[in-house]
Length: 85
Picture 1 (cartoon, helix red, strand yellow):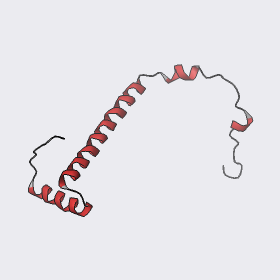
Picture 2 (cartoon, one colour):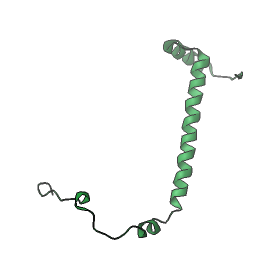
Picture 3 (cartoon, one colour):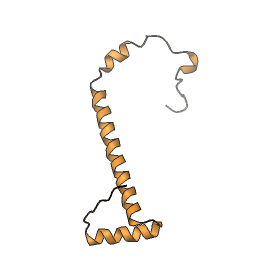
Picture 4 (tube, helix red, strand yellow):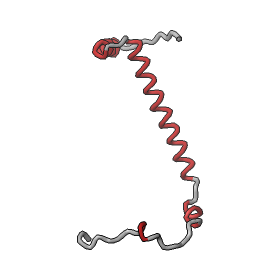
């Protein structure tokens, strides 16, 4: 376990103390949990942005050209609902 000293505005520190007490945890646990959640969110955002960038490089027409041009099976067909146009 590491020790990290940080400077917080008094209002933020007091808010953290109140919330930690309400949650029944220490301020250290609260800050550690909050930091873990933030890091996880940033990692997820970075990952999704990387995936989106790779997706833009794909030519969808090349993929669709590989799909055979056949009629769907009866069970897979969409039947129009004549009652609700």
